[in-house]
Image (cartoon, rainbow, N blue to C red; front, top):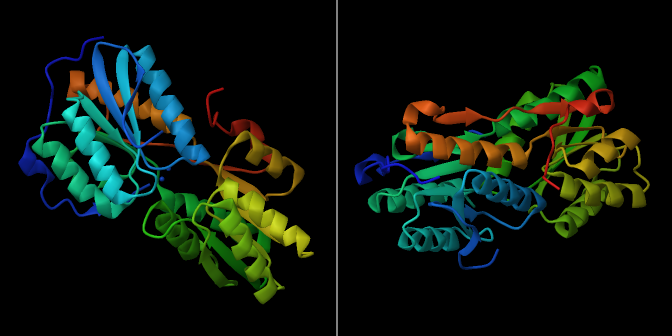
Length: 318
């Protein structure tokens, strides 16, 4: 479907954005992923399972809408993110969808796109000042962390417990998750360790090994994604700490299986498929008519336990 006349924000709208996370990570250059009469650039943040499932959802939904997609990946480098955006601008895409590497990079990214009169749509995050963007599909990551903390509150039943945190990468979505988790913990739950696993299972396993050695009485661990959580579980089990309860997030098929068999106590379903589908559909709709879709779409979150496994949304398209 051809896009209508572009509803692009002027450069002034992107000034002094003061970005803040309210939710939520292929090669260096852009690559055509599908053919269509409209064009969409997708700048992904990294190559994690979440990020690749998000990309798949963007590609599939755009193809259904008859939109041609160009892809780029910033590989957790804010400087690369900006150069990817500049490359997409040079391709004169109709709309630019971005899964940012770091919230602090957003101000420059949005200003660059606005100066080129290219509308930008964000996934996972939004900004304080939304006048400079076409829209966003966001997840409240503070709430996500709070859901895991709420389960610990109920499970601990008021008795004193020790909690460890294996965070993701500092300065991005992980900070909001961890803050929401820590703030929602009950007074009887003491955080005895908080270290970044960098969304890397190898790093997370090393963090967990050190954590359980320093705190052999650990009762719970909050882990910022399921990929790391599997490595943390392995480290705890090998150290003889099979009773440490792990709470995490994603809602992958493997993660749901781990909840079912008890390796994880709970996970929070945060579906990149839903985020990607929502982002493309809303971006295309708002380009046609800004009133056709909400500017800020809130992605639902569900705490998944053994009792409600069937409530988890599909995480990634086959």
